[in-house]
Image 1: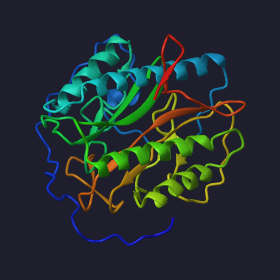
Image 2: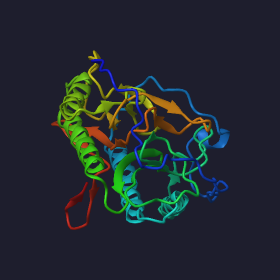
Image 3: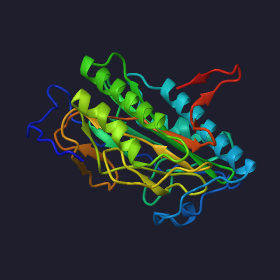
Image 4: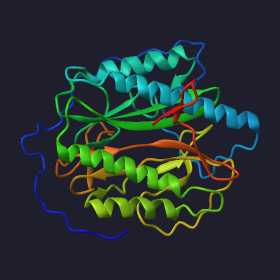
Length: 306
């Protein structure tokens, strides 16, 4: 990964720094909802070094159903984004919609994570914990939804504007969307995973944005996180994609330095210089001929919704 020198100055400007609010009590999940193994222990599971390859039509259908549910729940959450709405209200809506569909909200109880969705505002790169903070005009927010349905996880995230964004915020978000699309475009049987990082970095570099290297995409399916480690920057991973493989791509671009620091809650990652950050994510299935975006919502009329 090419190193770049970033100016050591705050990029907050007149924008208020994001601060932690009050976190509400953990929401309950009805007993009839099937839970992933880690939910009972509250322990963050070890990284699984095995790729997740769906070898039967039944498993492909289950992975697809989980992805579609995650996409629909994310779309619902996005409809709530507006000035004055608390991120805790978004969590409540995600929690209730997931359970109503017979699924479990995967983030809840993953290690010490206390909520059913991640909400990451402005300089928060990822893993923001929903709380009492109200969204403000001009904010940008990433909503990261994962659901566990019939033994499979579906994982997706998107950026949303709170009111009218600044031109710089809009450009950052649109570039991140382009970076995700570029990463997906190289996916096919036989492709090397390093092609994803190269495609994404080309977009980020051309726009002059930082590219966070501390977090990565991952295998997803029966297990929440597994091999492959999908790096979003140039790398030497010559591992190859095979039909049936399911994984995520989730690049995180920054207005300034890509270096992050973690809050005391152990989860919330923020840019060190206060610069804006944007992330977009899809779960993917490698097919015999190319790639299917599992979390791209397919409406009943046959259209899709990014």
